[in-house]
Image 1: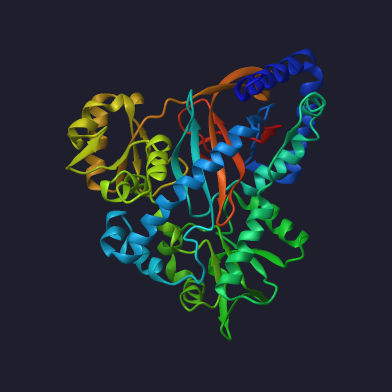
Image 2 (image 1 turned 180 degrees about the vertical axis):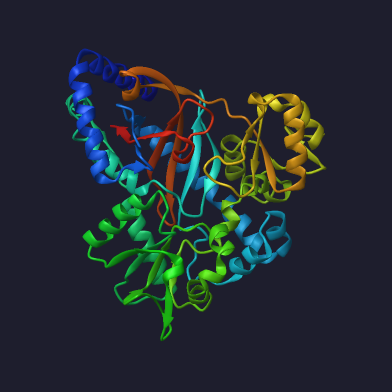
Length: 450
C-alpha cells in the first residue's frame, strides 16, 4: 500500500515530468498566470508573489497532523497569556514596553488573545518545527486563497488534476467567521461594518483590497483606511461618514504605538470599548519572539499536560532569551552565554520584536568574531537565541530561470483561527535561510492530495 510520503513524491515527480514534456505550453501558461496575478493584485512592490510553476503538495495525513500539533500547542500559548495577565513580571520578561503593557491590560471584549494568527514552520527530514509565531496580523490569507484559485486555471496544473485529486483550503471564510465571532463576544448585535486598518502606503495594500472585496461579496460593508484618519463621534468610531464596528487590525502594535499621538481616536475607542479590534493589542505577548523562550522555561513546561509538553519539545526548537544565566539543555544545566559563543553553527539570533527577517543572524553564516559582537549586542537589547532547524528542501521549477528545477527551503505556515484551529496553509520558498515576502522569497499555493 502506498504511503503518504510516496504519494507526495510520486505526485511531484509526475508534475515535473509533465512540465518537462510540455515546456512551451508551460512557459505560455505561466505568462498567462503571471498576468492574472498582476491583475488580481498578487504583487509585492513590483514583482509577482509566485515565480514558481508548482504548488506545495501535502498529503491529507500531513495536513491533519499539522492541525493536531497546533491544537496540542494551544494550551501552552494560553498559559503564557494567563501568566502575563496575572503577573506583571511576565510582561517585563517577555519584553513589553510600558506602553505595550498598558494596551495589553485593556479589556478587548472577547476571549482570544490572538483570534487570527499564523505559525511559521520548516519541514525537517522527518517532521516539522515552528520557528516563529505571527500572532499580530499575519499576511497571506487573501494572497494565498486567490493564488490557489488562479493555479486552478494554469494549464499544466489542470492537466495534472486529471490524474490526481487535489484541493486547497481557503482561509478567507474562516477569517470572516472569526471576526464575526469576536464581534459577537464583544457585544455587537447589528450587522457589522468592517474596516481594514493599516498605513496607507503599506506594500501589502493589494491584499487588503482582496479581503475587503471578499467581505463585500459576503454582504458586509468594508473599507480600507489609515489609523491616522479616524474620529470618534457619539461614542462610535468613524472614517469620514463610515461607521466602523470591527477594526481588522493589520497595523503592527509597535508601529501604531510609535505614532500614537497621530492615532488617538482608535486608541481611545479601543480602550473605551467603542469598537471591536481584531486582533486585540493583547497579541503582543504572543508575537514577541520571547514567547518561544517562555515555553522552554521550566515554570511553564512543568505546568503543561504531558502531551502538550511533548509537542513543545518536539515541534518548537530550543529557544532562550540572551542573558547571562544558567539554563537547561537536554536535561542538564549549562552557562548560556558560553554555549551560545561556542556553538554558532547550530544557533540563530533573533530580535525579540521585528518582522520580515530584520536583524536575524544565522551563526553558520557568520564568522566567530562577528558572532561574538552580535552576542554583545544581543545582551544590550531584547534578543532570543534558537537552535537551527535541519530544513528539508524540495525542487520547484522556476520561471525566472527557464523552468530549471531549484532546490528550495519550504516555509510551511498554517493559519490558525480561534475556535477552529488550522484552516489553510501559506507556503513560502527561498534559496536562503530567510523565507518571507519582505526578504525576497516567493510564495506558492498549497494543495492537499486526497
